[in-house]
View 1 (cartoon, rainbow, N blue to C red):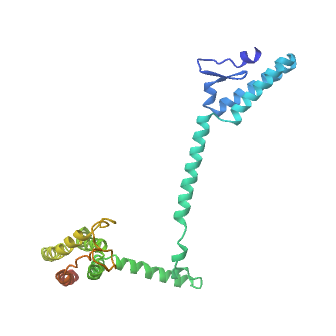
View 2 (tube, one colour; view 1 turned 90 degrees about the horizontal axis):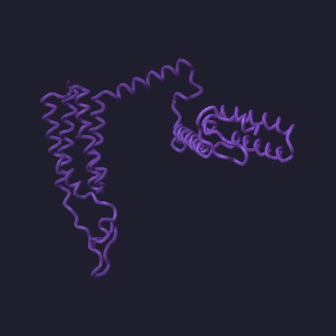
View 3 (cartoon, one colour; view 1 turned 180 degrees about the vertical axis):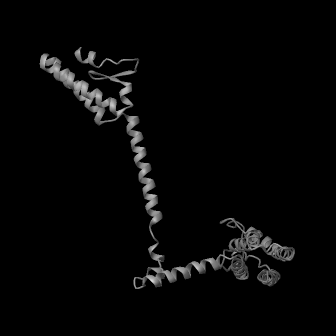
Length: 269
């Protein structure tokens, strides 16, 4: 009775019974209140043990055990939140660690990391690098790299790499080209005329590549042989019909000439 009176809550609360003790729900939500609850319980138990019978002492020990369990073993909801928090922290730390790890297999030391460089040599090479990056970022040089990338389209068409071919056409004649021309202020009437001619020329090639794009496994029941397979008997698979790529290659060659014209036109501005 002395323990119950000492631990009587001051306001309305939800209680649960744990053996002998009465646990206030407000003590669940605050570690500070749990510690205060434990200290009060232990103090009351000590007084009860000194004046009670052995039966009362048994109840006091039970109260102490229950109070200690609240401190050392958080409630399931609190324990779950702590576990989730720790797991999230570990996951984010692991991701950050992986992101900062260098690719050792492809690692290449920069010339700036040469330990034999003097201070003056280091700053000289650093200035050279910055200047090279500045020049490479100029719109006219971006346009030239785009032209060089477009010139790989013929090989992609011959090797039937249609997905990559469409990516190259899109990257070098689409919005990326428009952005570079705007950055370099190459958006005059003559430049627009050349760009329109370029896009019209590659349209047929892009449309053909689109028609040849296939979902993996789509031809499994089409009756056509897989790439590199030659039918050896009647009734076997059929060879895929070969399209005449000569007109398309001629279109790409014409488009490359138009691209060269565009670069020369922009260089004079």
